Image (cartoon, rainbow, N blue to C red; front, side, top):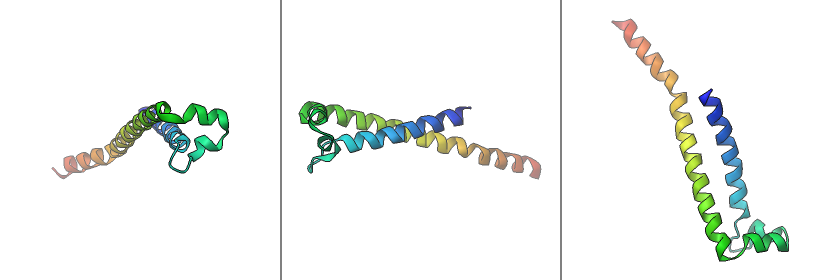
Length: 90
């Protein structure tokens, strides 16, 4: 159940991270300015840059945490198998 929950969170954070990165205004304008004037006002400027940067960093931290957690949980079966093999050798 935990594995399924982490998979769902991981996929949503991944998609949200992609969206946040694409909305950031880069040197060439980015998707924020391509969507029209209202979006460029919301996502443009310095104030939104700090917010978007922090949002990107938070999403990246959650993405890395779920990645490490999923890797650890998926290797749990390998650890149990090694423990079982060691107990059978004795």
